[in-house]
Image 1 (cartoon, rainbow over the protein chains, first blue to last red):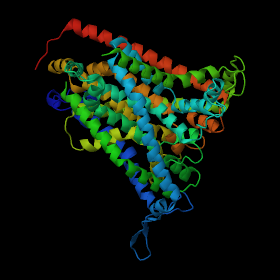
Image 2: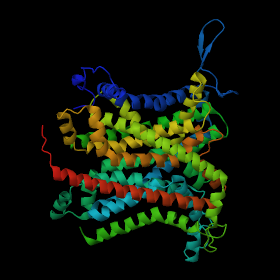
Image 3: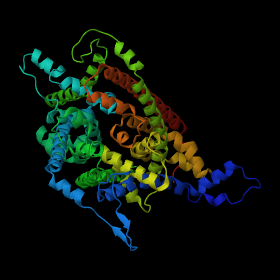
Image 4: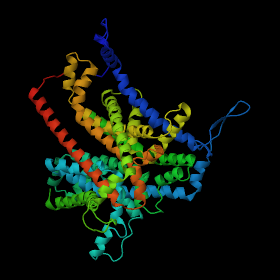
Length: 325
Length: 281
């Protein structure tokens, strides 16, 4: 059964006077399927896909004073030909200036380290929640999701007061006598790691929980009965079966972290250059739209592989759920 | 399962939850601090809440953000529902791969890319067809709807997949048209997901700094933009008060929605179990 098809069967005999509501309902019943798919399809084509084509185009333009501040690729020359000018200078610039190369490697490194930390913190949480009895499990899951509903910016901001050199963490550690001099966390890479793990932890825990919850406990019991040590059972049974969740969660943390702007800006130092911050500065401070576009395209190329992996898992999961009904 | 490993898991979980909640708690506590220095306690006071309410810039930005968030949530819920229906019910159709790709890519796309590309689109459109004129609430809403739709679609897809189709089939067998079946049966059944999707889209919009910064105009600074420019200058107790209000409102809304959905769920379950409609094949 599909919405919209085969619905016109009884709708042929038109009454003498058709009310607009009748006409609307006939229209919806016969064209419903096309509308259901067509409206979001067109929206996404226009507002999601087309913009990337424009970014690509402008990344080949040259900076120009004017509104908008870039040159046209296609020009009508005096002798009636179109001249296509593709400026590769923006991309060459990205490789020449070490600032960009450093920003790219920095972003990848910081995103990878943060993802590893998020997995380290998130896995035991997801494992514990999946193993908890049904009542507490709902509450614990809820507690994981709740911070996600409160403002991201505010949650990042909360760490400034904690991590500052005269902040709450340093005050606590000094008063306990654990350290003598304040730790420098705010303004270092550690601040960024903490911020990313904190902000994206729910994205790691939820996919992990989804796979761990489906894990058949009889497998572990069988391993136990056959004399398998708990850690070995964990490594040979739990971990491989949780792999789809691990990959999905890691991608959900890694990909946005590469392009993160707010966290390095607020918790990182002046020298914590990440690619999102470079793009922001090119656009808002230098007002160089073509270079900002080239930075965006380069970031996309960097992220194509992780995004494809993520989509592959999403599609497989959707199919699995559909088949499991 | 042996006790020692359970103990290990439990302490990690305690650490994880403390990590998630202590910063928010500290923020709430220090919003009642009398002094201007955020990390030194100087006695209880609610004066920063008063200051906040008198801050016209913040209040104006909050009003803009609220309007954008409501419009965004409503449009995104409609689009997301349609998209989810197409994905779950339409089987294989031409362009499905592209569609599902466009529907899941916004979930992970870095904000700076989305923001820049949306802005460039709006500028090109204005040059070409003269719309949207300048940038402001309209452009922010369009950009927000585009990425919120993806989130709403995920929420509604999972509900549609888990939905019991027998009632729909019964209605069809009794001669109801697809549009009627959708309005009278599908919508009420997926209502909890619609509410969840709406709230999610609302929150995403209220929360977005980066995309809004790209596509906003001079007179349309949203709340996160104002907060960000003030936070850049350092910690301020007024922002702590604002944060507390936002956290409390979000928690109450989510708890309320969760409670309502839970109740509705149990009600539906009780009703369907009582009726036991035997429809097969």
